[in-house]
Length: 478
Image 1 (cartoon, rainbow, N blue to C red):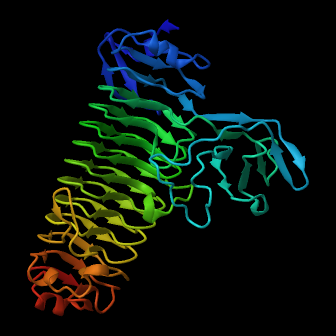
Image 2 (cartoon, rainbow, N blue to C red):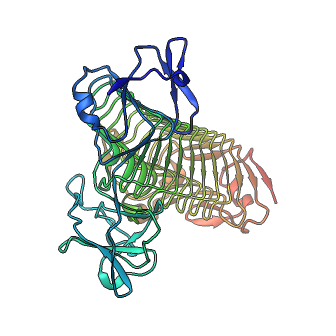
């Protein structure tokens, strides 16, 4: 344990803070941080120093460690610094067409908050947090030995054996063992910068980086990948910032947050999450936020996630989605569901599998300045899923929706519309008295269906759309 003073990191007495790729994103004007080298136990070093101490995580792989910070700690990674929750496996034996290794006694929690996760049919063991990686690629965890095929693996938890179908010789094989990289409850003012955080066995709905009751955390310029549950989760937290991270290829979600206030999610790349096959209607994809207040999601690139891209679900109030690009997610690009007041502005939502932007059972939402097109279903869609239900701030009711000044390209999908469905099916008040409206939008309908709009329970053409009072000042191109 030494105090670091590398000339490559210092500039006029200030420590330059680097991302995992070496980009300068800030500095700490303070004493040089405490250096921690690969192979050194991190937590005893933290415990030996007071709160407010900064630590420089040296380049190399720091395996099988969980960091529990103190108030005001900063953890700064040198370029190439990796926190890994995985163990390298080398002693494989041949058993007919398969290979196995013994002595695997790790068994993580299959649930984070009391209820087990729901898995899709092709991934029956998404609830088991252990993963297997071959050359940094996760294999599919099958539920029975008989289901082993190329590209999959099976954990016999009774016999403490891991089986694979492909010859592991000559490859880097790792299995995730430790549940969290950074874990804290009620800790204020933590900074995490410039680290690669990977291959932790965190359960669904919990992050490899998890903070409960956090205040003023800064998680910036990290690469967070290949963890089983979420990359980052925050619960009951205030004034935290997640900025300029690459959060990709995690098993369930990139980011999850619950009951948090004034959370800023800014300039992150969030991609290819949900490799473990969690049921996307339960929770899986790019992000999910619940019970948030004054959430700001700004200038993120959210793409190729298995599930929704950006998702506010349940009692979110005063949300701002601004300047994001959502693309190639298998479901909705932006989804604001059973929540309250929100502004969705100046985003690009293109080529997602389902709708581009969706508002469901939520009052007081304004959608403007967005470019939306090429999505598999309707480009901007509003719906009411049930009647009579309320949450923290009143009824979950689609009312006072104002969709204006957007650029919408329908292609072969629908353009825009509103539909009461499920428990609200047939209720015309959502068209007549709830003050839901589309105003002054621009539509490119070349290649679109003859009736690309939805109003009064059916598909209609642009002349009928305008006859119903929608986009009377809009622009339509065929």
